Length: 297
Image (cartoon, rainbow, N blue to C red; front, side, top):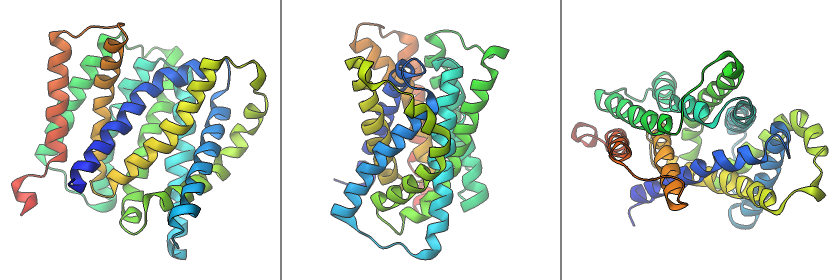
């Protein structure tokens, strides 16, 4: 199979996992585990899996001059990204968080231009705006957005998370051209663990593991294994082949996938508005991700 096609398939499945993550993570927090403790658990679990994969299958040397950049990637890709998202999701609604996260591709295209000089074309801007409109239509159909003062802190934290992840995508892209994704993620999560231990140690120590219901244990396992280990690996593998802007614009698929999941479980139905929103999102993703004839030349 064509490696570029495989990269797009990887992004699709990564965003399917992220679409399910909103509900599962909200179930766990804060009644069973506080956000910072949950992040520490995520990072420990994912680092164990990345370390196992790295030492068993990759064992690749990293140049000393790249270690500092990997440490910076750990700040933006793990510490700020995950801590601020879970703390923000805990203080706001899933709909608010979804709406704020749609700003991510716009931030990424600006950061990519400033740091790696990725061109800003009319085609990309049009694609992002179409995707943004389609995603917002689907998200807001699930309920009203609430930007009242009671949710301001949560919304701000989610916005910082979106910005941080945008910086991470741009900074890690050159490293992925040199090293295997598992090597990158082993180092990024290794540094990330150092950063999140002070914030999550007490919260994780307070968890009463013996009284956790079975379904909560399964949701925790999903967040650790799927949302953290598998989704990060899929995204990194795709980023090796595609631009940061293309990777980020796939976030617009999340409300479609969440809606399909709800339809599958009988909690929602398909209507013309959803179909139109989905078409706008797919068109937006296409415009951003498929290079124009000029770019191909």
